[in-house]
Length: 224
Image (cartoon, rainbow, N blue to C red; front, side, top):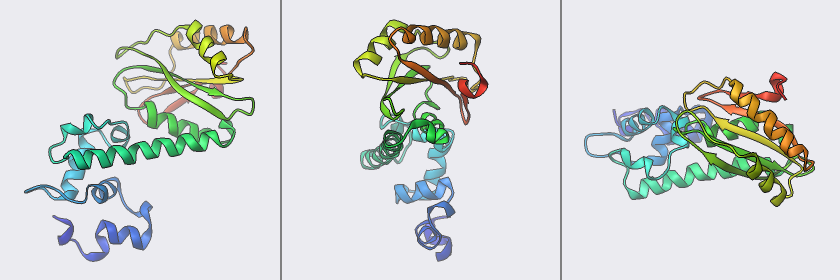
């Protein structure tokens, strides 16, 4: 079924204007961005295929313009527009973290990290550098690894904390397997980094482990 075949009240654009964006499901929202399908494939079907290829909206939000080339029917213009929208979402969330203390909005921090790290197919270790008011100065993906592990160097983390004049940090890394449960190695690494940063008077506020659809906080677990 094409959009033209739908009753006017059920067409994505009209539905959004009448009831707001939250009334649309993921397929409908993406169809609005794509605007057109291709020969023999309506835009709603193209949106469904795109979401299926990336395992849902979470995967799509972490897709690059190069990743989008895998979808037949997404030409350069559509790929560029989608990549721009996805980057706007990331920047909007990062801006919100810079304008208020990070832990005034713990759910927003988790959502942002899920958006940034949740669907990487390799492990990434990131550091959120915070000022004395615990507002975000910078988030940096400092180390990248394989599917199962990443080498993290405390000396480099300390050096970067001093360069950014950070008063505190939050660590974050993803588990490409999808399970957000911290490992013993994660706990040992956190304590090692905490000890190293204490020497330069930088506090470790949390370590967040990002899986698919879930983020686990060391601080909430009492592991710090």
